[in-house]
Length: 164
Length: 254
Image (cartoon, rainbow over all chains, first blue to last red):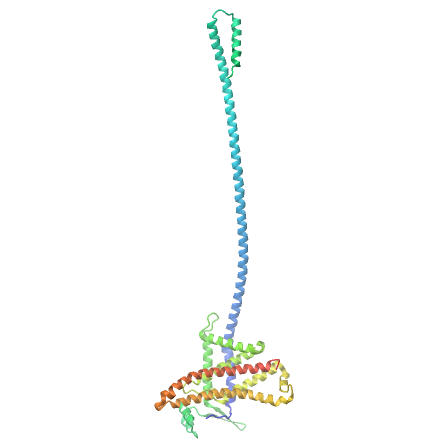
């Protein structure tokens, strides 16, 4: 049963093997290798893309952070400016108020002075007429008109020196 | 036809089992006339079952390629890709990847074809083509020619210098080495597969009478499982040796 004689089967089997090699290479290996290559290329391109996106994201992030910092600075500047303006305004208002108060006070003092002068003048007139009346009653007929007049003038002077 | 084959001369016990399992009525060999006085004979069983193995290989390949997809590999595609990766790794480990690129499809075909042929033996009534010395010798001769083709391709005439280096005294030894390479490869595969077949037939013959469970059936089943393992190991060994011999032929420090 175990025969070691060689015959044409050897060549037939070599032919079979070569046939298999050619057919499998065309039908199976090439398409599968193409798919493997495609996958490798796909993975490589995906990795490259991912790396690109990563760098882009880093750039974007840096830019965003810079923008944010800028915006924050601007906001701070705006707030500072507003604070300063409001302080100035408050100061202004205060000064205005102070000036107004001063002015009102001065006006009030001037009014008082004027009223005082008016009152003094009125009083002077009234005292003069009262003195004349009293004097005329006291010295109904003793004094001459000149003397009366002098007397009256004297009295007015005295009244004018009165402290009011 | 079966009767004709069965009726052949001295019938040993194994031959009887073999001819009883030959349910396809294949003759012992086909005679295809003579060319220049030499008879052209083909071992019918070997040839027919080689065709079966080729069909199985093509079927496997077709299943792998049919739904082949870059994103979602099908099961058979994944198996083939693993095989490719594995064999490519072996080639790249043992030689310059540039030199080994052309060897790749040959090695894959060796592995696939021999595996299918070997494993086919576990199917009842099937005959392994690799259990025939003709097949294994044919493959070993292909490996031998690969050694020469690769050696001459990458080293030119310098390839033949290793026969006489460091001294022409070694010429007989190197020639014997070159003969021994294909012979050992052929007989290693043939012996393993033939032994496997003989064991299967012997155990099958025990499946009779009272001892069938203890002797034949159980042991036969276990043996069949072991056969699959041996089949794959032997096809791997053949492939590995092909790669090793070719890498030896192309390496610079040879």
